[in-house]
Image (cartoon, rainbow, N blue to C red; front, side, top):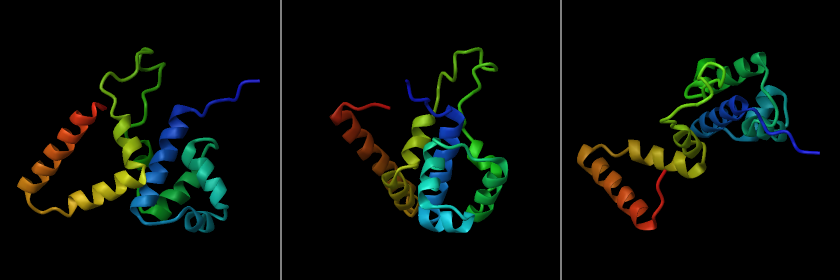
Length: 137
């Protein structure tokens, strides 16, 4: 029997919960406590394994200080409304990156750089390193 894959929207919403939780510096345990859940349940929400109900999503949004709509920003297009071709210029990889601890750390450090010139140089450095390693998004 084949294991059912999580719905792309559930995965997206879960990754946005994880990203916001990490940006807010809240652990899975702390979020779970506030919701009356275990950290394992929070993990399942963040992976999209378990769906988040509307009322639970509203609780999460309140705890993390964002509107519910935040969790749907950049969500994959519905195949029925997108003609089945999806988004040509998808930026899902950005959300995926920002949901990692490295993405959070890099983003927090980068926004602390005051000089536009230095920020530009950091971007050039990262692009050069990416070109050297042969990896492209």
